[in-house]
Image 1 (cartoon, rainbow, N blue to C red):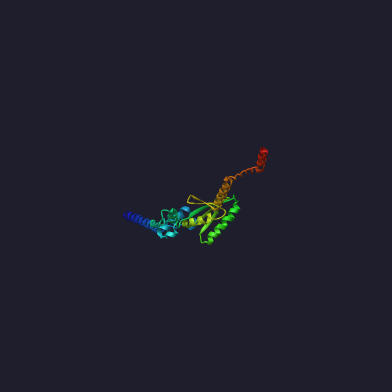
Image 2: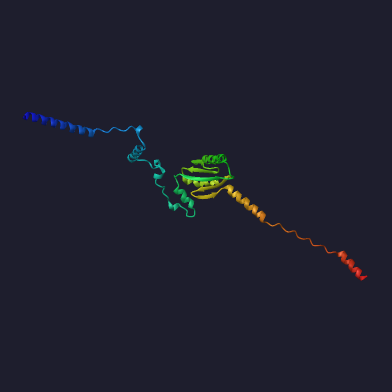
Length: 218
């Protein structure tokens, strides 16, 4: 009876030992990694966050909204030229410039005209992209927003440019200026009064007066 009891105790201790070893082994066993081909959007987002936390990313490689704004040296800013401050604040940042083509063109004409403008800017080493957004409307996108005002000066000097918009401010183009000058000239011409002709005075009838005077003497 005693031997039977000891045998049962030994079996019980052995089972307990095996269970404890099994539990320890399951904790130490690494979990099977998920195949990257099975990753969903949430898995990719977590992976990207972990990668950004583990690695040092250079400032230029960060998304634009995460970059720190460029430092501005206010001692070099001329208060009489607000554009200078805007140029400094937009340096290295994407900026969109809107332009309108004059004379009510078709979308194909706008594509051709603004394509020539973009080509000229590209030849002048401007990193610029173009998007036609209407029959007479186009967007020029610059990677360096500080160059937007130089692009504005070029565009407003073009014959078919009606206006250019930068940061909500509208600048008239050459086509608008020409129309204004033509209208002004026409108004000046129409406003001028024709000079009145001077009425020519009748010459005195000297001979007739002499004849009447002689009759009276006779």
